[in-house]
Image 1 (cartoon, rainbow, N blue to C red):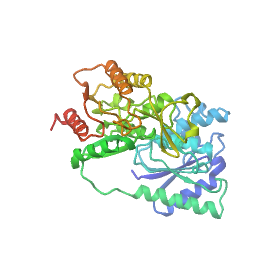
Image 2 (tube, rainbow, N blue to C red):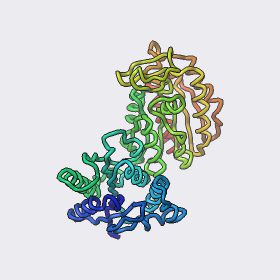
Image 3 (spheres, helix red, strand yellow):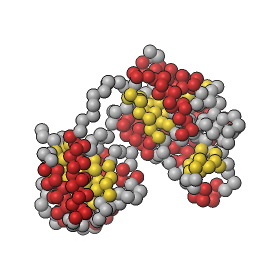
Image 4 (cartoon, helix red, strand yellow):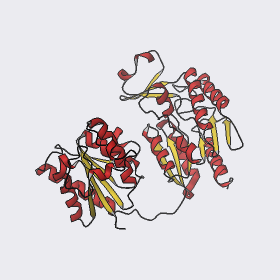
Length: 400
């Protein structure tokens, strides 16, 4: 079947712009299909009508065309996601819109596998795009002018966007060795650990390192769920701190959910669970006055977690790991969990560290396949990287 690029938007308000993008894509030699997402039922001129998309809603098209804009947009977003996932000829997806259109189209983009070209031309693309991009590889392009008619600026921007999505759809990555993909999590204070781990794994593995900034962990787990990562060395679980205590780089409540659902081999640790991340000092909530802080830079303030907070994190992490039925190894570095939690370092706190380890060990239900190991090393010591790699090889290749 011929592969085609889908052009999505609301034809009742943006038909001229959408048709222009479709025609620009066609001019490159690529197949293009215009999909109407209008919730008024008044869109015309599309290759796929809004009612055909709405029919993909679990409750049928009537669940979309309710007459209430808010519920209609949410329902159409759900229908469009299911519509997109049902296509077997999709080579790329491009959308146009303001804030409403962006919220309508990007859930379908996030649902597509990583690597499928996705481009959203939006009036909100110069602001905080995290809610629209999430853990996926959605490309956002700022529209400069509103998506409200064709003019000398919008024609150039939209033509660029059409050329970009056509180019992405045609692009093929160079052939590489078919080695197992391993997901690893890293933060600045665990960089030495992860770099040493990657070095020890060697060229026999395709190492995918994710920065533990909230979306990093989500991106890794999205790839796990998609079957694109065959094992995990989750050294740096620091996003749990921000989830539980209000930091700016939080995990979601589904952290480790993909590991549990897939049974992927998992080696984990407690990297950077000594810190909660905030912005500039004045952004730290008042309830944390008097705590131990470290200014990483003028825009990042780190707060040392207490023994009580570490107990809570240990229990939370243990409960999540108990849901994982695949092979699990948890390695605890008794010499410190980050570069700041080391002898003489600002966050050194043996009591807090012990509270974390004890709570995790007490909560974790150890079995033949799920084990916890305490090690006398600092997390950034070469010996700890050795242990991580040895544990990973044990559960994936029997130690070979």
